[in-house]
Amino acid sequence: MARIVVVTSGKGGVGKTTTSAAIATGLALRGHRTAVIDFDVGLRNLDLIMGCERRVVYDFVNVINGDANLKQALIRDKRVDNLHILPASQTRDKDALTEDGVERVLGEMAEEFDYIVCDSPAGIERGALMAAYHADEAIVVTNPEVSSVRDSDRILGILASKTRQVEQGGDPIPGRLLLTRYSPERVERGEMLSIEDVGEILAIDLLGVIPESQAVLNASNAGQPVVMDMESDAGQAYDDAVARFLGESRPLRFVDAPKRGLFGRLFGG
Amino acid sequence: MGIFDYFRQPKKGSAGVAKERLQIIVARERAARSGPDYLPAMQQELLQVIRKYVEVDDDAVQMNVDREGDCEVLELNITLPDHEESRG
Image (cartoon, rainbow over all chains, first blue to last red; front, side, top):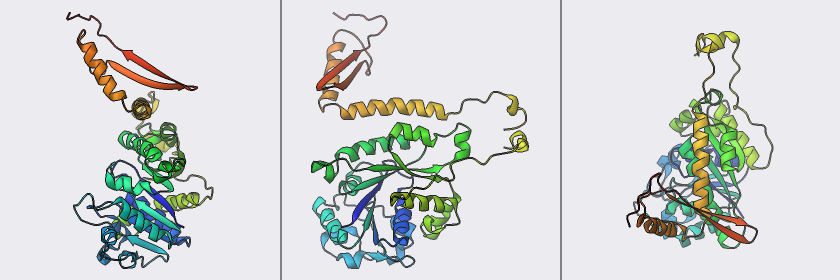
């Protein structure tokens, strides 16, 4: 049986798709059979981030409606073994993701994969609720910025009550925080919420901190998950997050501003 | 930071303000989530009743449900204006 992970945030543009692609790729690179599903019906984007946009033939909604089977719709990654992508539909029909349909497709996938990563759309509408409902655990992607932190707290409230596990009388699913676009220099200057600040407000375990990095845009430009760029700070930070996700303990990196000498402090910008 | 700034007191950054504002709004929204479903409607009705007698702001009625043991305590806080005028 696969473990189902939802990558969510409430707010848009904080790095859910980047994170879904990086975590799924990282899991597959470690030999786990992994699928990543785009739940953002109408605004398909995971295919671009994964670099497989020209190979999309069928999508999630086609499988739900029975127009195609799972094998036909799943795109096998060309770079990484054990990695599959299920793209979102571009339909404008908001109700295309039916509860029964999503449950059936996830049930079928659970037989074949070790991990299923669900890339949630922004907001708290149907797509986001569907992505979270079947999850066994959550990764909450948050920027160190007021609106993102508030929306993450709202999503945590939804995760605490609106999952299958809770509805069946179980405990709320565990959720961990992934703080992205973090700038240690700005934190040091008192211009950005620190890891401790966000941790104190949201009160959940920390999965990782991804520094603000040019590598993320480079990766999305190239359609290559940033975790594959192991030269970059963001790539290494995502690799750490994947290791922690699998239970390894790794110290946080890229969270301190480089020390500047007296000269730098006197004349630096 | 240039040579002159170095000798000045470091000014408090905006992150402190952000944290303070977040703590307040998040606590408030959590309280609203955890309360019974009828709370917002009750709050509105209370506001209407109070307005029959006193002109008050929209946020004059604050409600909070706390649990103490097996007891639920409803805390009701009504802020009246400085010089209330009864409309009789």
